[in-house]
Figure 1 (cartoon, rainbow, N blue to C red):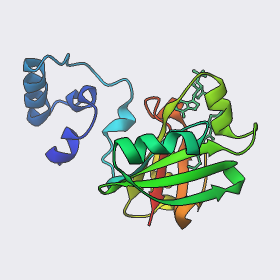
Figure 2: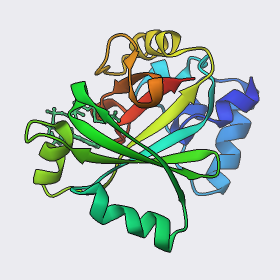
Figure 3: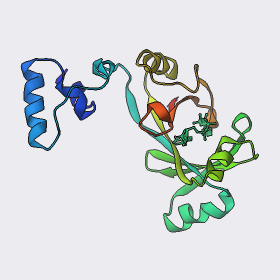
Figure 4: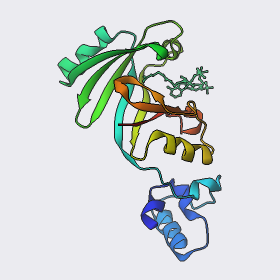
Amino acid sequence: MKAHFRSFHPKAIFCGSSSAGRAAASQAAGRGFEPRLPLNNRILKLSSMKVSHIEHLGIAVQSIEEALPYFTDVLGLEYYATEVVEDQKVKTAFLRCGEVKIELLEPTSPESTIQKWLDKGNKGVHHVAFCVEDGVANALAECEEKEIRLIDKAPRGGAEGLNIAFLHPKSTCGVLTELCEH
Ligand code: CMX
């Protein structure tokens, strides 16, 4: 129980009047956190979602051809696959970085969400993909229960044949979040 609480936002561990809660508040105060009531009590519910690792980081680029040499020739990462994801209007290139992959995303159409994102002056890390052990459908159900805004209401097929679903960055601390399962 305590271990779970530690993984929550620091503001969330101070609710309740248990001695453990008070001890945590006092410890955290010593570290410079301001004990206060959480803005949203639902965060206190323990998570049953199990994230095993970061599956990949999605990096938006205007041109894979131009971007790739930085990742292969400078960082020395191994490039191993290219795939076009038609329904997302992107071409992807995958590189290995230990257990985590880097997914370069190049728009294939002006209508691509990646192109729109680049056109707004953004570049670099576009999303973070977390691998969930108990399946994307279960993870989505839990997110929905906790009022996290879903982009995909059900798992769908993504690059590399993975089941995936996206969570809206407005609900996820500004990080466009992909959930995926192997
Ligand atoms: N990271 C963080 N915030 C983002 C974001 C991103 N990648 N993309 C958009 N946002 C923010 C915008 O900044 C904007 O915030 P403000 O309202 O404060 O300006 C807000 O989200 C809405 O953005 P928008 O430009 O109006 O864009 P849309 O609402 O049309 O779309 C999103 C945003 C996240 C719903 C859409 O990009 C989406 O559905 N993404 C999931 C699918 C995807 O990204 N596919 C490409 C990768 C495919 C793959 O990996 O295979």
